[in-house]
Length: 108
Image 1 (cartoon, rainbow, N blue to C red):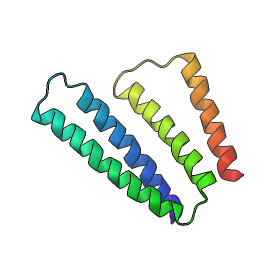
Image 2: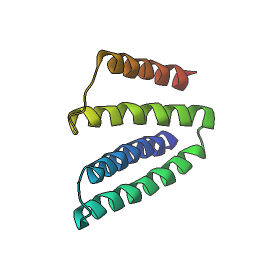
Image 3: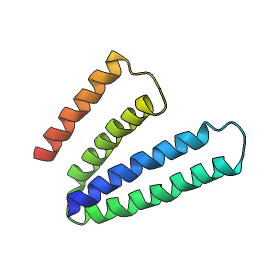
């Protein structure tokens, strides 16, 4: 069950970052910008609650690297596919290295 909580934390973290980015790209202060940023902060809180729940059973030395790396991978994906940000060969190699790091950490 703790893997479920860690997975939820990663997903909420990714969504929160996406909402914060979307809110940040709205040029002027508006209710839409406020809603996006507010939703990002709320989902960030859910991320934190799920992460705390995961830490009840998963060692910090495993949970944090996996959480961080998986979040980097997913945020990198939404930055490319949703926000049309660039993806250089160097970034692809870096993300592939992070994938290997997740596997090595989780199996270690």
